[in-house]
Image (cartoon, rainbow over all chains, first blue to last red; front, side, top):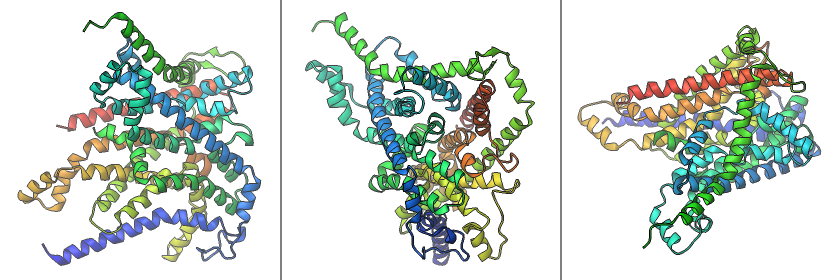
Length: 283
Length: 292
């Protein structure tokens, strides 16, 4: 081994990592800086990394728009979707993994096939169904929380993820609970749910990130400001007044902060959650 | 012990049906029924108001004579090819770097993963600002004595800019998946290669790459399926322009939908489904053959 070559290699690796970090983090820092700049300074030359003068005008502008409402909508929709998926996916996964019933293999195969279908294939009829539902009752269908939540309430991917985990729970544990007279619902609640904790966390994070960042369906199914979620509201803002960059960046900060906060707290789980499919792909 | 009677078994089957009912109901109403409807609509002329009229395969034929659809399809193929070359390539490089024993690995891993957690809409808006002709990208370029460019306003560079932004957003996913695969390659394989006198480049070619094959399949399948559906970035950054140079299949589909050509839009959706199903099948076949 020659130590000179070793040191050179180390220097190259470190330089590449630092350059990479600048490219990955720079845009975030620039966004944060812009959100506190007066509009005139956004494209100032040379670029100003520290906002001076410092202003909250951008935030005042977006808070005057219904941005707090978008935030509330995003929170309601994402939390509902996560809760429903955890319950429905775990329940269905338990049945598919551990209970015998006629049609089990066929129904599971049908679910497997739907994983291949891109969302755009369902999009248009789904919108049509939501319009029809809205005509039945104004509480459901298009431009309601129901319309935003229901199509994502029981995602097939979650059932697969949970089934894989629940299948690894030893039958003996379940069997002894049954001999003690526990009902299947009770087994699900007091044995499967606690044991499946890590898998549920993975599912919850994956679902939360996709729901929070989802764009196409909320864009299509909402048509008033009062029902828009953050990404839709932000996209509308960026197309409406392309000139007010500080307000748009303030909106971007508001959209990203809750996700980054969750990421900061649950970092390891987060990476696992978002790459959950990889385990399946390489296994 | 007595043999299990019919009673408990029936009860257990009923419980099972109850447990899968919400998921099956949601899948049927929000997935299977819409799939069947759009298959039917793709064979009709339909504006969503008056009843659909049967036109057979006319929508499909018309699409392949529509220059706008053909351009959108071509743009999407270019987007996928570029993105799926640059993305996994850079992702693998990043994973190899992150696999080195250096200080602050956790920090670098977090930095590269940050955009993965961020909404594509936010990423697209931020990069629209960075790529503005007075933006920071051009400022950095001119600092190094290079000429700036109106990246998103030029038909020659707009699509490439959308590719770069998408790669930037997804890079952390590819890097982390590759990193996990790198770390699961048994050290013994490297050791025996070293005993056989293989240098670091040959160890990479003959040990690392073959071991990464299943991961690569996964990254390509997920990546191609995802990037064929590119929409958010285009909607925010370019709206398909300039002069259709960033029009994509899904952007075109939504455009036909909003023009109330539901039959035409449904046909686009089924063409997309067909393309994705074919590609996944080919990829699995290819990787199966090469894996001993």
